[in-house]
Amino acid sequence: MPATRAHIINNSSTTFKNLMYEVKYVRLLDAPSWEDMKRKTEYDGNMQTSPSGYRDIYFHPSTPCIATHVRFAPKNADNGIKTGDNFKLYYWDMGWKFGGSFIAEYEYVSFDNIPTNKLYWLVNTSRGSEELPFVMVDDKQHFLYHDIL
Image (cartoon, rainbow, N blue to C red; front, side):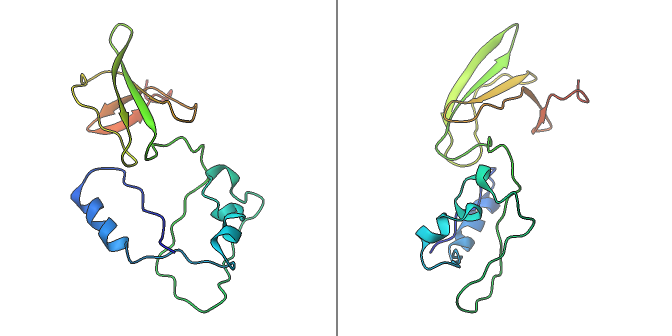
């Protein structure tokens, strides 16, 4: 079956060219069907159900194959930007001001006409609850931890 699409975390042309290259990749099964595969926590697509009790994940395909790429992700709070999720952006200007809303087409969001050099707060209204204010420095997001303040 087709492989899951790689995450698109910016709008560079290189990222989109890589998507065309990845069309030839497939998802390998080590069970008789995809329904059987999805019952395994390491393949169910939910970052919160990873097989945390195991140090290793074994893959045993029924026929020999060559794997050229493996896509994996470390266990996390699953609160990143996901395609189809709705987001609202706020910025601090003597109080939280609404900067706009956006539905993510990829794994990044972009807002127009937002004031620069502010404290920002991005809210996912579709899922998740872990949010931290952030600042932008040289076009990079920096969350406010004690070492930044």
